[in-house]
Length: 263
Image (cartoon, rainbow, N blue to C red):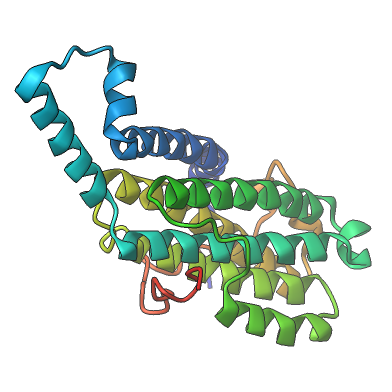
């Protein structure tokens, strides 16, 4: 049987693109939050910021119309979706912070430790973005973890024995976040909120893809190949596909919008 070959040029290109994805997503997220904040800003403040001149009956009618638009900008479902997203991010931050203190992570593979540190920062930024949108929409910030998956984490943490166990748990959290945000894109009522969820979902999918590749290398006793930058020539052929098992990202395991909402 002929040996499998890897298209190293394509893998190198994908590696570079993946490093750029999060910075691009954060730029889109910031833009969506800015636009959403302007759209949900109280009418009077928005009018003064734009420096417009409104007078008489026409001005009053314009302000009244803007106030009604503000009231209709975000629905109760939008706010719950944002709070649930924040709860998933809060839980991910907690898990990664706990993982970073484990001896086999802290004193183990430096690339895995660096990935955990960077991913923690990204999840913190995502939680802040979702909570910012929730409060701008008139809701409360969600500072707690998702209750359903916190139960999973609480059950799993005592059984963790090594890096592979940490990676497996992290894959579960990244996957549910990616599925949830992908589904939220079609559930929220505001275009800027759709942009917000659509910008964060691929970052979580990227985290999952990276973890799936790490999981495969750990299972194959090839932890020495978990490095940044990647040496494509040394990777097994499966490393080019294991991180992308789905042509279209599924949503069957997405969390319902009310799951992590503030009670």
